[in-house]
Length: 244
Image (cartoon, rainbow, N blue to C red; front, side, top):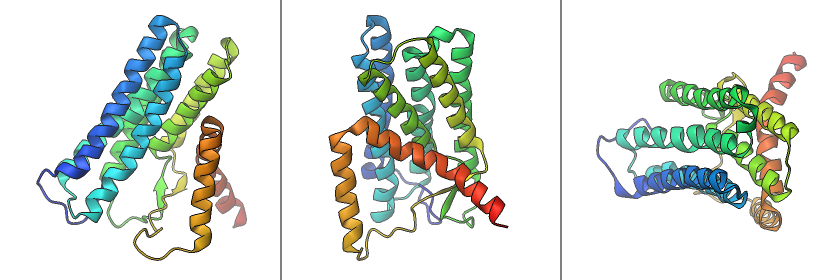
């Protein structure tokens, strides 16, 4: 929620969305803990869905603040703290409760690396200059990393993927998402896509088609979309490196 003209006040509307994201992230933790204690994998599916809800709420709060002229320093700090819980602590705890705990020390270390990387990513974002290119993020945004983790959990539960091999794969993916967050890879921010002006009809059609596909098979489509986005950073880096 960065803006050059921030107020020191506290505004209700954008912070309601931030609180909703915080609630969804906390609920995901509760669901994961309950799933682990009851040995009921359906709770992990609930946790994954809650993470996506948190992501949606997080994507709305900043836009609402800018559209309503209620951007504030309080909102920016609140949003950052909410992001740390929702996209740093929660994905790590969900994956640890679901699969990483079977790996012992390696499992909780992988979860910690992810949490620490998210904290570093948020700290770097908070001190970035306002003059930097808004077209790209530096490092994978933490909501996108959390979305990859949530998709992996959702798919794993839906297709009943058991065993130690799955735990190792989850650990590897978790660490890779952590490294992508603190990397110098550039990721398209979509901030130059105007919501107020006219958009081509094809763009509307693409959005409708995307929502239809997601509704048809949420875990696979969401997983494919966010994994593609996560891989776009290294691919763009390779393209820039070898085109010169």
